[in-house]
Length: 131
Image (cartoon, rainbow, N blue to C red; front, side):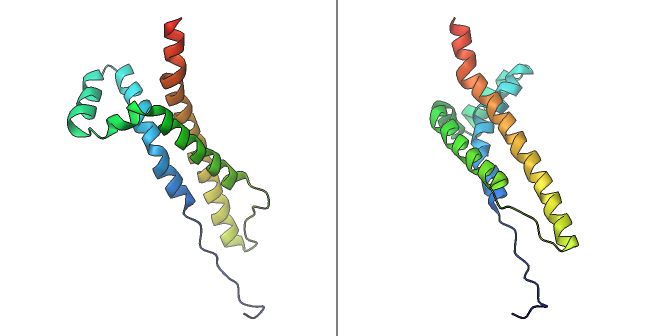
């Protein structure tokens, strides 16, 4: 490759996999809690029993679900904040890189907030209610 040729590196698809892998936390705990809080408990029961019964596994195994998604979120944090991460020097590519980084951070912190809400309702609230 000569000095005048620039190599364009394709972006990694980690964000899509991380988002896909953290969906069970949303389906297990955060979405049902929001629906029940809005008075739609029967919709949750219908969703879990009639339409998507496989979702029961996530709720019944919430320790596994939350553990795996915590590992995935930790890996995502490492990808987003790892040392030596930089954008290209080409102005167009740099702008696209910075925009992608901004959206990745928004999605990541949104996923962390959803995970924390779900973890609160799955693990902390039952302890508080038992007191």
